[in-house]
Amino acid sequence: MAAAAALAAMALVIALTPRPAVAKGPWVEVCLAPTVASRVEVDVTVPKKVADTLLRRTASYPGVCALYGQRTRMGDGTIAAFSQSRKGVPHTVGLVMSDSALSGLPRHPPTAGLWCYDVNGDGDTDQHTECTGGYEHPLRLSDQFRARVDTPFQYVLMNWNPAGHLPEHIYDRPHFDVHFYMNSNEERMAIRPGPCGLLVNCEDWEVGRQPLPPQHMPADYSDFGAVEPGMGNHLIDLTGPEMNGQPFTHTFIYGSYGGQLTFYEPMITEEWYREVAAGTKPGGCFPIKQPQAWKTAGWYPTRYCVRHRENRLEIVTTLEGFVRRAAG
Image (cartoon, rainbow, N blue to C red; front, side, top):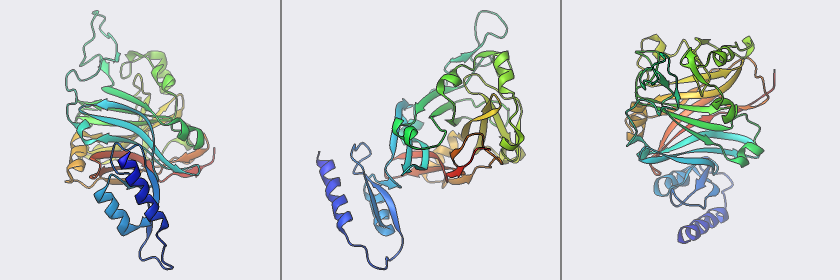
């Protein structure tokens, strides 16, 4: 209660502070929060210098206050789906991860054993050769966001891959797959394991391989038939640094199933997350290559971002720069 009262008093002071006729510097939106665990957060618009002070001295964060969806434990910390929007316009769809979630992660076996198939028929499944998918955490976005904002994203699926995955010498480093799904979790879960492709049911592999209409295929992306159970097909940017001799640190994958795009996926190494959290790498925002047309109208992102919030000891991985698209 004390924190809530202090927050309310601070917000009132800011709200009653008259703005000068000519503001010295820009005014910016901040979500005012006294602590990370605070249940009371307030939207304020303040001069940038004030915002910088709030972001240093309190647990406030940039932009409008977030709506949080599902939350769960990962490692020694927590992860949660969240969104930021105003008047039906999405600003951010993301996943927030406490710094402590990077500690205590499972390393062995390399997967949680959720998506396995006994390929050689010996009555047992080898975790290294007959299982896929790493350790997954599906987190639904808030019901309020999904009801009020016309964007196709429904939930975030965080995958921890302690041994990486194929292709070898590219994505076989410990990393996280942050999937932002546009189809339902039930549809995703119905993609069964089996002996085809990347351990997927052969009928589902055929569905996953159905090509996108040319106008829906993002620029520079190609289909290699990387259909996985519990996920779908993975489309890869052939111009990406890691596909051209550079080490993999972070990249962007599109997902598809049944001839339509089903997820957006920033893929980020454990090492790069740790460097961003430590401040030795800056993080930042990176453009998402776009298709020429979209099957369903709505708000779609144009960049993905990774930032560390030092005042909250957390990392956010987000989709941002939303633009309204017509169906075509």
